[in-house]
Length: 371
Image 1 (cartoon, rainbow, N blue to C red):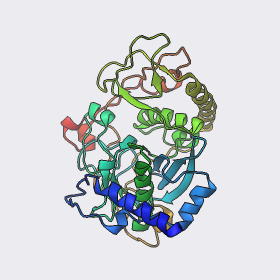
Image 2 (tube, helix red, strand yellow):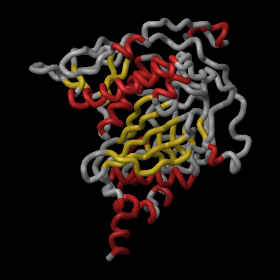
Image 3 (cartoon, one colour):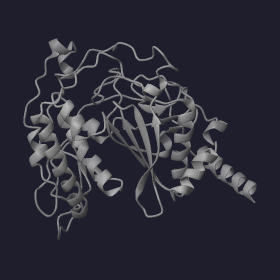
Image 4 (cartoon, helix red, strand yellow):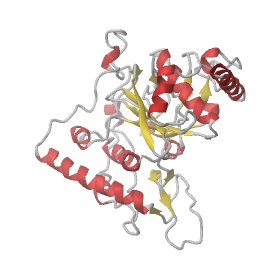
């Protein structure tokens, strides 16, 4: 009986993957369906799913943290909430803390990304790969470009999040199984570090701080509700869990580059996020008062690696091949949220966007067109 169920699952998996249009990974494309792309999850992971009451084909959310070099897979349980399933140490990520700005800067992306079946590549040059879908609507609205930014195997990275082959095999299978369950996509949340008051205080002088505090709003929505945040983009900014104002006769329509429509944030989500923000704000202020040490803006290294892999892969984190881009990030407009009907206030976050960021091509050693 069990063997028959396993055979049936493998047949369904093969049929599903056969229907995917595999994307090119660094120049390679193929219609072959290798066994690695249809491989079943290992028994210990299947047992963990059962223990955590997570259906095999339920949705997932992937969270990436550069500084900690960790990848988390969260999975929806039978209550409908997302819980942490497994944390994977990241074998290699490239660039520095901060978002990807343009092709060739070696930066691994930061932001909120949507992965659909066609972004799954079973024939990747790097064992298996999952394309993040960079640039997304936010990136395009802010004139950021790049291509083939992925989570993949082989522990080599040039703008990607690289895992070991064993790790990407599990992550790929978890993603594949969520599509088999009928889910059209899954969300990837990529962060510079865990967005705690302590980490934000350490990086308070970084010109990316405004961007990171914007990401924190979506992070807080997820962490306080265990629900995948609904992500929209308008006025070149991320907007989370927006809904029409009460008695609005029209549905919300967002244009990434244009002014935001009138909206409110889901009141229940806003209440939880606002309370977390209040506590975080008090802790952040205390840390600033204590003058906690400031992290360097530029590490001097090309990316990072979880300490679990340092002995196994010596020499793979080298001196950066690109210059720091600490002083030429474009200024972002103020956060558009209104302060009534349960929506999030912009008082704390809005202040961080008020200081202009000076573009200094000479210091950055990049063409002025990059500013």
